[in-house]
Every structure is written in C-alpha cells, then in structure tokens.
Image (cartoon, rainbow, N blue to C red; front, top):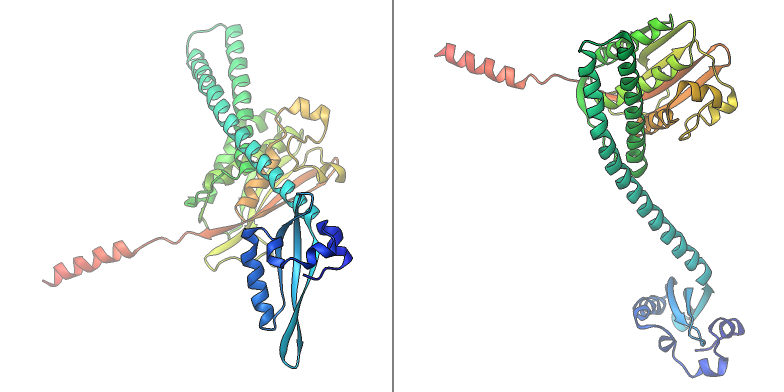
Length: 364
C-alpha cells in the first residue's frame, strides 16, 4: 500500500507502517468480498466505487467510500489507484435518522394500539349509557326529567363522536385505514346526508339541499361509508358556522385537466357550499391541520375536536383524490373535493346463461 498524507491522517497509521501492509489486511473480513470485486473490475479496466469500513489505529471504525481506478498503458492495466472519502459522519447521521424513524414508527404503533384499546373500553360503556337513555325517553317522565335525559343523550353522542374522530385519525396516521370498493347509489348518499341535518337546519331556519349533475353516473363503485363520512364532516361544519342562508351539496364531473384515471373510472367533483361566516386566507392555510380550529371563540361554541377536516383530507387523498377550500369572510365557504370513482357495470352473464338454457329446453 502506498499512502499519501491524507490516508495517514484518516487511518492514524504512518506511511511506513502502511507500506508494509496489503490493502486487504487493513479491512474487516466482511468488507473484503466487495473490495475484491472492485479490484477484479479494475483489472478488467473498469472503475468501481464501493463503501466499506476500516479500523482506525485507535480502534475506531471508519466508513469510507472508495473509488477503485485502473491505470492503463498500452491497453494493459499496470497499477490500481484508490481514492477514498471519509463518510463516517454521514453514516452516523443516516443511522441516527433510521433509528429515529424506527422509534417514531414504534411510538406511532403503540399510540395507535393504545387509542384502539381505550376507544373500545370507553365506547362499550358509553353505548350502554346511550342505549339506556333512549329506553328511558320512551317511559313516562316529567318535562324536567325528559330534559335531563336529552342532555345525557346529547352529551354522550358528542363524546362518542370525539372518540370516533380520534380513532379514525389514529388509523389514518398509522396507515391502518383500509378503503372498501363496493357498488353504491350516489343519490342515496346525498339524500341521507341532507336528511341527517334537516332538523338542525330547520331549527336555525337554514335551507339545505343537494343537486347531482345529470352527466354523473347514478351507480358507482367506491367506499360509500368514507364518502358519506367526508360529506357529513363538511356539512356539519357548514351548519355550525352558518346562521342564515343555505347549505348545498353539489356533484358534477371534474373539469378537464384532472389526473387521468382508468377508462372505467370517472373523476367527480363534490362541493359543499354555505353562506356562513367565511374564513380569511390565513385561516384557510392552516385549515387541514389536526386539532386546528379557525377561531378559538367560535371553536369552543361550536365544539368538536378540530380533527374533522384533517380526517377529510386524509380520506380523500387515500382514495386518490384532492380537496381544496375557497372562502370569503362574511360571504361563505365552499369545500370541493375530487374523487376518481369507478362506474358500476351490472353483470348480466348469469342471466344470459339462464336464458340460453331456457332456449335449449324449448328447442327440445
């Protein structure tokens, strides 16, 4: 080995000691294989870069990135040079990053498991409380007692909603949320969503309605439950922050220029539009962050965890779509999300098979 001053400085060995060594004797055994492969390539006239470890004179392990270069003359390899770079700090940083990633993933897994267990442990007795409240409302009660039971039921449902939000967000955060693709009727989803909020909107004297563009297929394939959940979250927000006017759910085909989807798919645009208090540009920039509420005072009055919109964004993106918001303070807000959904094609082969068999029987 012939070493320059930089090699002496990196390895800690003086040139006189290195001169009496072969390169392989400086390596740990497990690194010798890749180095030999590099030298064989150099003997064939090819350069190769390999990473390996070497022991410093003081016992430290160093990581080196070495380029093995042949020196040729007259078409023959006469010598081999190695140019090495100390990458020990880089490797240490990579190892620390990998360890931090593993610890974060483990913490996320533990948190998810904890939330799943706690959610189950809390929701089980809570469902008992809600069930008994419903039964109690069917008995003979004084007006005052009935009001108390209504408060119990309303508070229990609010707590159940919080638990569901936390559990859903935990599943999304840990990548455990799975989408189910099944045939469903889009009109029914919108009708059910409007019906769910009819009492609240009537109480606030708001108009609520829905409209589906005739060009939108009536039967689709997708995760109906999650689409319904997104719409419910968005309409729920609209009801909370709208004191007069209307709330509309609209569905049409997404405008051209959207990401291409398979031939059997269609990109649909869902809109939830309200005439509520609206938002500033600063509020909209943070709107989809977990636990964020647009205004502290209004947030406390309206209630909720601040997870609803973060869940919507994660669900939309998990289904291959995108979501955005536009708003003007004092005028209203429009949430729009685009989803690629498969058109449902009815399977008729079984029917035709039976018809053919019937024809055969008649022919006999």
